[in-house]
Structures are given as C-alpha cells and as structure tokens.
Amino acid sequence: MKPSKNPAADTPPAPSNFIRSIIDEDNRTGKWGARVETRFPPEPNGYLHYGHAKSICLNFGLAEAYGGVCHMRFDDTNPEKEEQEYVDAILEAVRWLGYDWGEHLYFASDYFDRMHDCALSLIEAGKAYVDSQSAEEMRASRGTLTEPGRNSPYRDRGVEENLDLFARMRAGEFAEGTHILRARIDMASPNINLRDPAIYRIRHATHHRTGDKWCIYPMYTFAHPIEDAIENITHSVCTLEFEDQRPFYDWLLDALATEGQFPRPLPQQIEFARLNLTYVVLSKRKLIQLVNEGHVAGWDDPRLPTLAGARRRGFTPAGFRRFAEQIGVSKADSWIDMGVLEECMRDDLNDAAERRVAVLDPLKLVLTNYPEGQSELCQAPNHPLKPELGKRDMPFSRALWIEREDFMEAPAKGFHRLYPGNMVRLRYGYVVKCIGCEKDADGKITTVFAEYMPDSRSGTPGADNYKVKGNLHWVSAAHGFEAEVRLYDRLFAHPHPGQRREGDAPDAERDFLDDINPASMRVIRAWLEPALQGVAPEARFQFERHGYFVADRVDSKPGAPVFNRTVTLKDSWAKGGK
Image 1 (cartoon, rainbow, N blue to C red):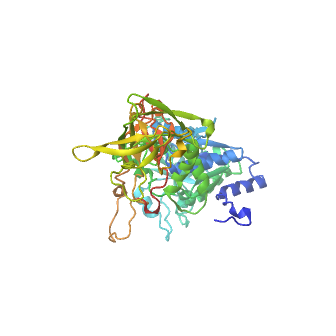
Image 2 (cartoon, helix red, strand yellow):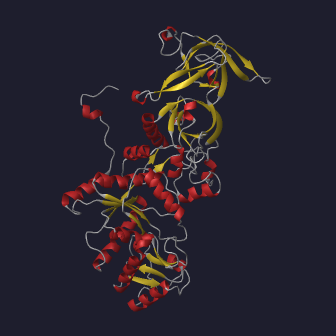
C-alpha cells in the first residue's frame, strides 16, 4: 500500500469514545467543577468475564485520564446468590488488570440503613406504597408494550398505613411474597419500567456481610442510583441493557433530592454497548452451567472467558487494556471477533515475552559423528528485538529431540527439513546431514540419524559456508526435561454458540453446549530446554514456532512447571483455518 500525500490520512482514526465527549462538555460548563468520579459495581454472584474487563478498563481508565477516582463497589443486594468467594475473586481480578481503588472500596450493604431512610422518605411524600398483590396479580396488571397497566387496589393506601406495613415487613412479620414496596409513578407510562416498579422485597435470607439484620432488601434498580448519589459519582457508566432503566434512575434521584436526601447536580447515567465477542458465552447463567455441569474444570479453567481463566491461560493485563482501547466505546451493539482479542495478546506478548525452545512432538535425532558423552553450550538470544536482554546457554549434545514433523523419510515437494541426504541447520547450533532413520516393529520412526559439520557452528567464521533452507529447533536429550504442556484452544467451535444456522429445521432448537469444541484442550508430554525448568508460575514465554505459553499458576511446582498455551503465533481460525 502506497502512503498518501497527506500523512494524516495514513494515521488510523482514534477509537470512538463518546463518553469522553460528555465529560469534556461537563468540564467546559463547570457542571462538576472538573471533578470526575466513576465506579465499577459488580454483583458478587460469580466471577468476572471478558466483558467486565472492558467495563473495568473504561471506568478506571476514564478516572485516570481526567485525574479523578474510580470507586470499587459491590452491589450486594441479593443475599441468596452472593458469596464472599466472589468478592475476593473480583478484587483479585481488578488488581490483576492493574487498577487500584485506594480508599474507595464500598458495598451496597454499607448503605442499607440509608436506603431504608430513602424508602421512608418516599412513603412519607406519597411516592411509594406497600402493595399486597401476589406476584401473578402484579404481572397481570402491569400491561404490555401496547396496553397501559392497571392501578393496584392497594395503590391509594394512606401514608400511615404504608409506614406501618413497611415497618412490619422489616420486623419480619410477613412471609416472602405477601407484600412489596413499590414506587408510585404512572401505571400508564409507555416505559414499563416506570409502571410503579418494586423497590423493596421481603427476603428471609442471611446476608454474607450483614447476617440476619435485615429481612427486607432493596431492588438493584432502587439501590444503584442511591449508591451513586451517596458516593457523589459524576458519571455512572453502564451497559445498554440499563438504558430503559435510566428514566427510573432519574425519577428516583430527583424525587429524593426534592425530599432533601441528596444535593444537586445528581449523578448522570450513561450507557454504552456491552462486549459481544464471538466463540464465547458471556452470560453468567451459561458460565455457571459450564462450571456446575463439569464442562470445564472450574471458574479459572483457561478455556473459560473469565478473568481468572484468562490469567491462568496467560492473557495479560496490558493485552486487555490494548483490546479495550482498540475496540473503543459506542452506543451501537456490534460483534467483535475473538481474533481481535487474541491479536492484542500476541502484540503484547511479542514485545514482552522472552523466547525459549520446546519440542512438543519429540522425535530423537542422533548425531553419529558427535563424540559420546561430550556436550557444549550454544548461545541463543532471549529476545531477538531486545539485545539488552542478553543471551542464554543451550546445551548441545550427541542426542537431541526434534519435532516429528521436521522429518520425512519420503519428502513431499517443497519439504526443506530433514530427510535422507538433506542438510539443515540446527538453530543456534550446527548444520547436520541426514543419513537415515530407525523404525520399530510397527513401522513407526523412532530415531533419525545424521552427521554434524564441525565447522558449521552458528556464530563461527565457517558457518556461512553452508547454504541450507531448513532451520530446526531442538532440545538436548541429556540436558532438557520432560514436562506437561496443555494446548488450549477456543472452547466453542462456532462463532455464535447455540445460535440456529442455515440448514436447521424451522422448529429446531440448538443448545449452546452442542457447540463445545472437542479439541479445546489437548495434554501432551513435551521436551523443554533446561532454562525453563526453574521458572516461576505465571512466567510467560514464546516457544519458538509454537506460540506463547505460560507456567500454570496453579499446577506448576518448583522444578516441575506445567505450561499452558496462551495463543498461537498466528490466527489459526482465520480464513477457514479451523
């Protein structure tokens, strides 16, 4: 591609981020006095996934960009599904991505008393009432998108009766489902979310932080705006599925501000398109199903699109930040190909990961004219683009391991590696000439024989006298070590798991589990160069020719690392490659 005459035209456009434009305008008008406070508010009922990484990078990144702060907040308003295990895992994942909330760690449960006061304030103002309809009756009276709802027969209860019933709900007098507190707004509103939404329900459940202090709990849509207001959040950034809830968000905070509960200006809810990524499922329900039914080996299975799994897979925080920056932030839903995320990881690892040698499908090569019992050290660069990282020693000996695919007894056209009579260079070592092979009783090749050229060692004056096309990697059989290597691939074989496709019967239903990739994990025994034996868990390397690998943070032991493949060197799924 020829460069244009206008250099600016060759510069790729910056990723879109309309939220920055909103903040810039707020700063121009002085709305918040140049203050920017965001928040990341997960519910602790599961592990974070790739979609959360986008939200984390966005919320913390905006705060960093504008010299503000991002609050880490847990929306723990549903005691039946939330656990301390998830709290701990979420905090670990956010820290791993490289973000810090400082003193700004909060829980919705910290504000239960304040939320209760807000509910009382709404009741006293005639803006909330206790409804005693059954759940079925409430659904029937809610209306549809084309028909208005009907007022509850309990909608006109007086303030004193509502206060009394709400107090008795809190005292534990009533069974679950007998009463519920609703906001009094408009049952004829075209927005169903404004048709007197529920704001408090009875739940006789023990909370993981407050214990049995409460038996009534605020609904998420009620709690979230109040949390934002308590914490003085300026820009409450959330995904598009909450767009229909924004009118209630604004109504609630305006009603509470009118009653003197909060000062103005009030937090602003801003929605952006969530991450839709091919070849994964990001539904929490489906992730739980994959874990509970044993389709994966837990929440940190490297094939699972959780951040715990990504970390164990060897994905990097910098790769996620690069990905978030590259895809930008928009209002429109769209699909991002998994290859984009994988390429971001490759870009980061290509720069950061040192190089090492591993033979994944070992075949023994014996150099018949190399002295038995002798060895020497060859020099290999730790990173070809970073000479400052120096070189490492690679022991060379008579018996070596090479890749089985690097030898053919009867070579195909264009095959330039080892075959009888051909010469190749052993990378960082010598040129060798194949003189034959040995087979077992079944005809499988067990050993290849070659002669080495003593004057051909890499880096010596005579090395350039040999012109060969093949260049093979190897590991000394006497000095290398055998290790478990896990070759991970995408968990699903179809870009949209569970989606109907062409050729399906009109009434056919697909289960997303049917699209699980049977080749998503393969465990092998490989031979690795000795420099890899003492590496620490989570150390990342490029295994030459094979891709990027990480020492498993769970199963690696001192002197016995287990390696996981993070990503291949090239996108093997592109252009029909899978």
